Amino acid sequence: MATLILIRHGQSLGNAERRFTHGPEEPLTDQGRDEARAAGRLVAAHYAPVALYASPFDRAQETARLIGESIGLELETVENLREQYFGELHGQPYDSFAALAEDAPTTRWQRRPPGGETLREVAERPATQSSS
Image (tube, rainbow, N blue to C red; front, side, top):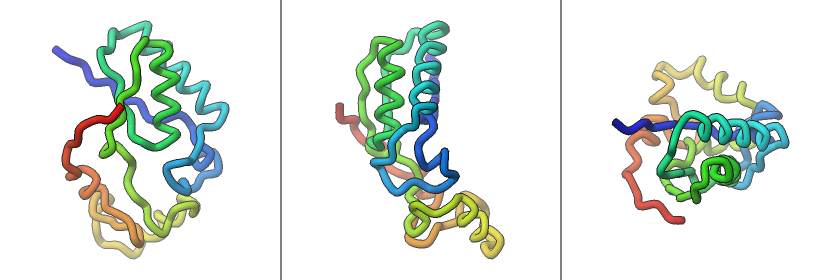
């Protein structure tokens, strides 16, 4: 039986500042790099992975490369693994989205950030080929 291991990217600058990122180029912090290395050591100690995938976003790519150093795998990029598009909320504090929830009668899966996409739309993205 196969085991799927999901690891979120290490702390990004946006995470540290408690805001939505400005876009795909948001870097990891030093703490985020340490988190990625620790995750790589943990995975290497307990599993024998056969593949390593990440979204095209810089913070996910850097996290995966650091994990890959520990597990001896090259990163494969999967375009549709990218995070939810938050539209006009890019760069805004996390509280901006919470404020929208107060006025929205929909569930978290149906809530659309202004100019962005819903989580349901993220889940329904078609599978795509990876590009190394």
